[in-house]
Each structure stands twice: as structure tokens, then as C-alpha cells.
Length: 444
Image (cartoon, rainbow, N blue to C red):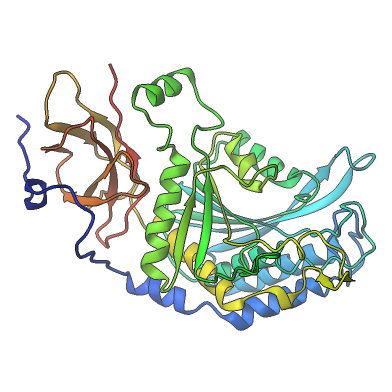
């Protein structure tokens, strides 16, 4: 027989104020502190040194063009792999790219570093490494791409260097995509590959422009806030999933929204003076990111990007015009901001990679009218057994989870009306690493 579990805070009005205790894993904190601004800067300088990384530029020139950049990434990652005790491998993925922007096929290369974990789950970090000038087909002009997207590439290289030395449960794939600036072609290719090969891909985190802290025109400066974009209604839903979403009013609780909330919580836990802002849109108006290609294949995917964009630097030929300097040069990077954004990624991925599999069959009993919310679930059938579970609670008009209740059972009765609150359940490891929350749903 289910029993009611009462907690003191339930006897009072539901409020969000009060002390919040955050436990940091010492190993994750050390990894975050290992992030080097000097390394981030060197990577961006090296990428800019290839003059252009336009997809139409040379694949064979050893010093200039997208081919030289691909070789650079492969060599850097191979260097890291030698110190990984066999955990990390690196591969070049050929890409025969077709587009309305050119005739025939382009032979490009995408680079993937895989840090192998002990189970089948995969977490993917994305960053496109190609660049462009004002004209996307101009492959002879200087196109430095320091922020777009040298910043994302630098972050992933630094994460690869650090996490390749760590033993993790989930596998991490760091994916450096080509042909982004011509329609996210490379990301589509990898997303289709992941679907075709049936990867157990639990999270996709795209980093695109994470180093600029100042907006053009307004001059707004902010190096303490980063945005995460996430889709509400999934791009891919079965009819059953659609019916469950509608019945549970779950338009704000898609898997991507849960991942975004997760990154906010873990990122802010480990990175001081940093706020992760949830943007409830898949991406910016009229523009696309590599994560969208994975969402279109049914994967849980989000985009991390800077709070303020500077359009004087993005997709601009380098030079001064009308008294304004244009171009995406390293001088436009706030490297402390880039370090913090790298840390948000690293901490979130490491925590998730050490978490147990999620609970299964998470459900809300609505068989009778009651002011008690009865929630039940099953323990995960794969991986290490969780130490317990957090039941997460928030009011319906609140963005983030407001309360966490730890239980070791697989059920809980809460003296809260199911009509007034939203619930989720997440597994917790012996070390306190939480998994992505699973939205509690009811079914007729």
C-alpha cells in the first residue's frame, strides 16, 4: 500500500525563497579549474591563421583553407588521445556535400573525437569549424571566424583535452562539423548517421558563437550570462507522444527543455558569476544551428550561444566602412567569458556522463479525484543502480524546478494538487550526479 510522505515545507505555502545547498564533485571542480584561457586563445589564433575556412576553399593547401583546418583539428585531438590511456579515439568522416550554392559535390572532412565510457549512452558536443565572409561563396577573402565559430571549436578542443583523461560512464563525442555556413549540411550528415546507426544519443549540445560579450548598436556588454535555446514541441513526435503531450499540457516540458534546465542547474552550480538564460525557442529568428538537424532526427538537442551578438563582426568582410570596423577577429573575443562558457559545457557533460540511467515508466495516478499526487516509476534496467531519486516540483507558471525531494523508493505521495504543479523524476548516483529529469505524465 502506498504511503504518504510529508515534508515540513509542504505544510507551508509553496515558496521559492530559502537556502539552497549545492554539492560540487571535487573531480568536476578540478576539471573546470583546468580550463586554460591561454589554450583557448591559442586555438583561435591558430584557426584565424588559416586565413579562411570557407567550404569552397582548398582542401589540399597545407597552410590555408578548410583542409588545413581539418588537419589541424585531427592532429590536436590525436595528440590528446595519446595521453588518454586508450579512452579517446579520433576519426575523419568524409563528407560529399551538395548544395544549391555550388555545382556538383564538394569533398569535405568532419572530425569526431570519441571519449569512450563504460556504457552505451552517448553525449554529443557540436561546433562547426568552417567560416565565411559576407558572400558565403567568397573563398578568397580573409574570413577569420574567430567567434563564429572559432570560439565553439576552442571550447570543444579544451574539453577534449581535459575529459580524455577522465573515466566516465557515458561516451562523449566531440563533433567538428563542416558545411555549416552553407546550410548545416555537415550536421545533417552526422545526425542521419546517428539515426541510421541507432546511436543511444541522450543529449546533443551545440556551441556556436560563445565568445563575444558585446552587442553592436546598443553597446550592451554582458560576460556573465549565456543563452540556451531549446525546442518546445519536438520536431519529431509519434501520434501517441502528441496525445500524451496534449493531455499533460507538456508543451514546455519536452526532452530538450529538460536538457536546457539541466545545463542551467549544473552550469551555475560549478561556474561562479555565471547565469544560464533559458530561451524557449529552438533558435534565433530566421537562422539555424547544427542542433536543429539532430532535433529533426528525433534527438534531444539544444544550442548554447552568447547573450549578445555583434553583427558588425558576424559574416562580415574585414575592414573599416563608414567609421565602423567590421570583421570577426580575435580582438572581439572576451576570453574570460569564453572560459566560463567552456566550463558550463564541461561541468554539465561530466555530471551527466557520471549519472545513472533515467527512471522508467514515470507516471502520475489520476484514477480518482484527490489532492494527493501519487507518482510512481521503475528503476532503470540498465547501468549502475541509482542511490536514489529526486522528485522535482515547480508551479505551472515557473520556468525552473523549485523543489527537489530525495527518495530511495520508486514511489511518492505528495500532498500537492496535480492540477497546480508540474513534476519530474531524476536518478541520482552514489556520488550525487543527477541525470536529466523525466517529465511525469498521466494517461487515461
